[in-house]
Amino acid sequence: MTPESAAARGFILAQGQPADAGAMAELFLECFPDSVRRIFGRRRPRPDAMADFFSFVIRVEPEAVHTARPDRGDDDPPLAGYAIVTRHMPRLWSTAALTGAWIPWLFRFLTGRYGVGFEAVPRLLAQKLAFVATFRPAHRSAAQVLSLAVAPAYQGRGLGKLLLAHGLDYLRRRKVATVKLEVLQDNLPAMRLYRAIGFLPVGEMPDGRRRWIVMQKKLRAT
Image (tube, rainbow, N blue to C red):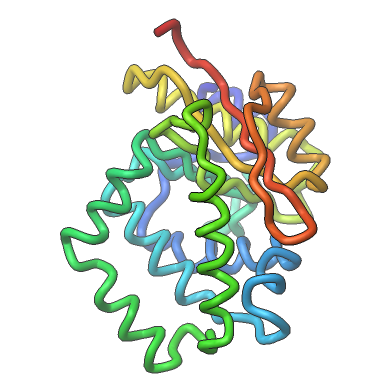
């Protein structure tokens, strides 16, 4: 997807910058309130935790992060959406571990900066363990659509598809063969979008009464 075609739809797409992390975190909390509530309960976490993680991704793999803002001619347009499409998710986590990026995250959690209580930890761990327990070879793909969000005011205008196309183009340039994502079974708009782009379901993962659908897309012949 070219910058010209993005502008033609009324949006300016750009590579994510560290200054975008805060707005991305706020947008994540706005777009996924049910998932946030399920993990953290009624106590809404501060955006700092997500902002720290997004900043880390932008530093480590800047081409993985794509942002969109409305093309309306002013100097400070709001963030309309973002996509994070990493080419190697395990490497991203190993970089966080080996560089000690997790140390300030842990300190901020323990000192209450993230606004997350210890009661959320068992729910978060249970979710991650459920994902690991249901891992299948068919799910194996280092590349992953990690997060995709579009502000409610800009939904229904094809922006999610535009951002995702930018992310997949980045993976193709890096010769990635397959990319995966996980989407909740009741997120029907997202499911329709992913199917329209060519993602196919390859498995499921439980999350209490709900299920995450694992979907994959081939980007090139292996």
